[in-house]
Image 1 (cartoon, rainbow, N blue to C red):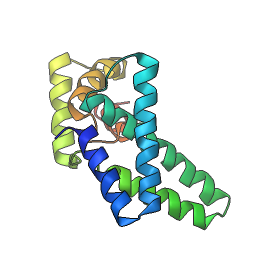
Image 2 (cartoon, rainbow, N blue to C red; image 1 turned 30 degrees about the vertical axis):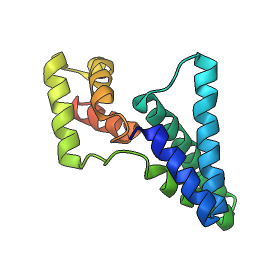
Image 3 (cartoon, rainbow, N blue to C red; image 1 turned 45 degrees about the vertical axis):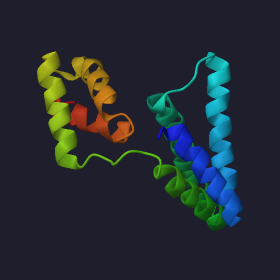
Image 4 (cartoon, rainbow, N blue to C red; image 1 turned 135 degrees about the vertical axis):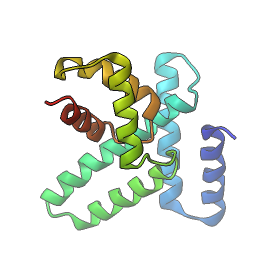
Length: 148
């Protein structure tokens, strides 16, 4: 079952159960996927669909920070619930040891010696860890390992 099929099945389940919040979120996700397909004139595969989901999660994390600063606990709770629901579509996250091993492997493969080579390393790591790690955290870890 592809990721798109899973999302559609979850939408049907949310309709049957009457879960309006989840249904709204899934419809918003499908609209974002469809919008990207129309804009780029392509049909998204699972990796591209994951990037749409990651973007939506990132937007909600930024919103949580803003709502916390504004003292809006109700909106923080809503956005946090949406983050949790969207995270369910991501593959299992890499643990710290596996992520470090992946980064060290990429450093060895590229022959990276300094922070100037960070782009090469990140290109390899991003391809292998897409959807399974927070790329901001990966960037910080790569920088630390390269002595930045």
